[in-house]
Image (cartoon, rainbow, N blue to C red; front, top):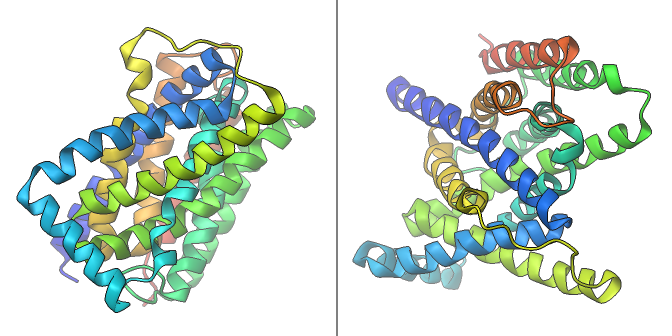
Length: 309
C-alpha cells in the first residue's frame, strides 16, 4: 500500500475523530433535553437517513452504486450480515444520549477508546475488513493494554461512584462494536463503489434497529417527558455521522481497521478534551487525571501504530 495513501487515510481519520467528539457533545445535550437516550438516537439517525435518501438517488453515480450493491448481495460477493454495521452505530449514539450528560465527553471518549482498540486487534486479526488479515504485533498489543489503563486513570478521581463506573461500561461496549462496524462498512463500500451508499446502508440499518427499540421503550415506559428543542445545532449529530461513516468506509482499505481506529481515537481524544474545556457542562470539567488519561491514550495510539520489523 503506497505510503501517501496511508498517510492521507490517517489524516482523514484524525479529522473524523474530532467530528465524533463534537457529535458526542451534541447528542449528549440532545439526550439531556429529551430525557431519553433511545429517542435521541432515533432523532440523530433519522435526520441523517433523510439526508442520505435525498442525496444518494439524486445522482447517476449514486444510482449506479445502489445497483452494484444489489448485484453484490445477489451473487454473494457481499453477505447480508456485512450490511449490519449500523446496529453498532445505533448503540453508540444511544450511549451518547444516555451517558455524556453524566460522564462528560472526555471520560466517554476514553471509555470508547478502550473497547475500540481491543476490538480492532481482533477484527484485523480475523481479516474482516477490506484490507485483509493484519498481524497482532507486540506494539499493537501494548497499545491496547495502555488504552485500558488510560480509561482507569481517566475515571480514577470518580472511582468511588458506582454509577460512573456502570455508565463507563456502556461506551466501552459501544467501542467494541465500532471496529466491527468500520470493517463491514468498508466491505459494503468496496462492493458498491461508493462511501455514501455504505453510509446509507449503515443509517438504514441503524434507524430500523432504533425504531424497534423505541417502540419497545414506549410500550414499557411511555413517551419521553422532554420536548424536541428548537436550536438547529442540536440536530447536527446525524449529518456529522454521515461524514464520519463515509470517511471511515472510504479509507479503511488503505489503513486497516486498527490503524483507522487508532487515528480516529487520536482525533476523538484531542477533540473531546477541547470540547470539555471550551464548552464545559456541570459534569464535564476534566481534572488532571482525565487529562493525563487522555495523554496516555495518545501515547498508546502511537505505540500501537508502530510496525514490528
